[in-house]
Amino acid sequence: MSAVDTHGEPVSLTSLAVAGGCAAKYAAGRLEELLGGLVPADAEDLLVGLDPADDAAVYRLDDERALVFTVDFFPPIVDDPADFGAIAATNALNDVFAMGGVPLVALSVAAFPEELATDLVAAVFSGADEQVRAAGAILAGGHTIRDTEPKYGLAVVGTVHPDGIWVKSGAQPGDAVFLTKPLGTGLVLATKGDLSEAARWMTTLNDRAAAVLRPFSPHAVTDVTGFGLLGHAHETASRSGVRLRLQASALPALDGALEAARDGVRTGGDPRNRDFAGAHVESDGVPEESLALAYDAQTAGGLLVTLPAEKALSLEAEFERAGLFLARVGSVEEGAGVLLEP
Image 1 (tube, rainbow, N blue to C red):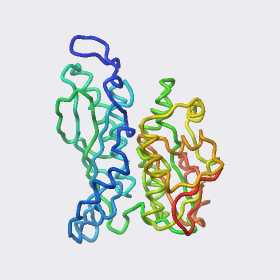
Image 2 (cartoon, one colour):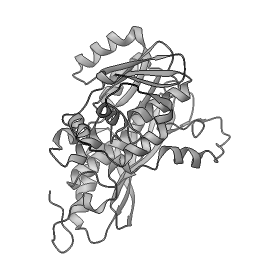
Image 3 (cartoon, one colour):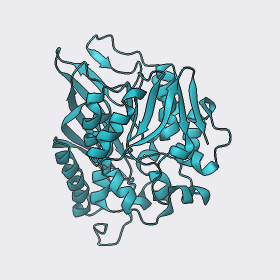
Image 4 (tube, one colour):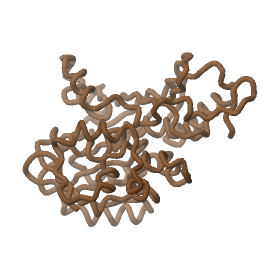
């Protein structure tokens, strides 16, 4: 669908955005500093809040049920309005899957210039609604304001068993480390070339991967988004009190991502992610294009998973049986920080 304004003039959605997708995230280091001054609520039923923060908040209702809450929105990362809505919705819904939960209901969080044609904005909502339905949830309303820069996303509520919550702080020495999607969405989108493969992955919900993973009781899970693989790996390592050893040669990449990195393509999220995680990452001998891939801000990325190494072969077999992508990219050991080996 072509984007037009109320006068029928062609409009490029991405031209209206300063930064698109999860690359628009507030810098991780500044965010930690900002939230560091907030005192977590003293409530025993708040199972996951700000201490430590995770992909979503979790509040226990009773011994069998807990609610998962998340909100995520960003400026356009593609020009097609339906794709933009679907990608933004996927990114928000995936936070619930990253906590081991299942989404129930979602509300739109939207901001659009009044000059945009109504059918364009409607297409964004429609693309999001289709993804919410695919996730088994309901888009039940929302809030829309006027803004010169378009933004869209969702607030999502889901459920999880209190004993089945996945957190990023549980990695243990001896674990294997996996990714459930290839990396490089930011790099590929920045090339302005063929975006079909990137769009397909960014509209792939993590629900099926989470369903296959659930019986394996993973130790740590997070989804890889705006802080890049190394930013999220750093969070997992620091909050778990372990070291993540990753192999650069094993990192899966979207077609064209490494080539773009070799050509010097970078997004605005790259320097912010290096500022956040760089001091905690050892990467001697790793080619710069692999580093760029590992620091690249992802939108609606896959799950970063750690679980006991003795379960690794069975997990790989189950993912293959389900026709799902899975890449083993490293291991967990005693220590601190992240080691990225060539």
